[in-house]
Length: 382
Image 1 (cartoon, helix red, strand yellow):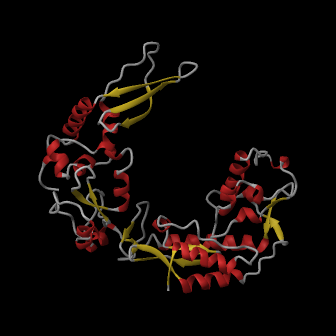
Image 2 (cartoon, helix red, strand yellow):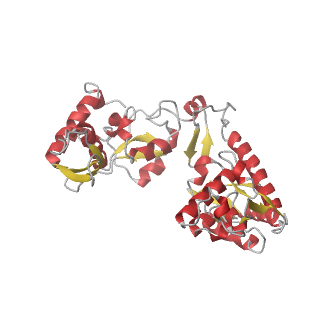
């Protein structure tokens, strides 16, 4: 039986709440599986499945992992030094140490860098809830830790579970680097990409065989959910990635409602974020919207970036130092408000400048002309 992420969390809580170390899945969401195909419950890996466009778990696998974890028999009185002061980077020990340091700072307790200042018997459970609810291997380690006056103590068997979980996680991470098509091992380049069935690892060569290049044949079409279902984007390659990578979404212009082309998850997410115009081919891609191309414009959320690049702002009268901007914001009428601050004065000076919408329009057209390589972006081919 399939369990939603919320139902799986509740099932796990029900099966482990009576144990020394309860387990939780409330930290799991759809983004969890972008990094790995499994989650850890103790030292047991449980796979996530994408079923009908929703991430789920199998009830049987949750029950098996919970039963195994509950049967470990962790003795809360058998404590050892957690070894946080010797923890290497990117280990469960380093993560817990960071949480303790941040938690004591935010709760105005003595700094964890000076452990002798903490009272003997101080429990990690006394830290702010935002930290005590954080999980490793679906467990909450801070709730089980105590300060002895010299070191942080943790149940011996629980520390062993976390060590084994780290080994399992490292092994799974290596598996996720292997191309599911040819078995090649990914180097620094990330080959993991999303699909309707979940995330898959495909090298550029196998991705090129599994999907085909997009030819621009959908340009000018109105985006609808029905169209996306009838013509799934994942049969095409991402039109922005420098190496072949399977697409996942039909990117479309929200101003005109027209298709631009198929993008992978990474490129689709970056289109809505600041700095997208720095990506090679970004302007050409945005102009695949025939509405934007005809009007020689860009979507509103990219116009502030254009103004930041091209507009010339005068320094305030009292200072000749280079301007330091805080943010650029697009208004509903198309104008852009630029907020500046000068740190050379005490108190700091801050002021705003509004660039009118008609001037913004001219700057956008200039940017398109300069970025389109003598009109290449207006070509009818993708």
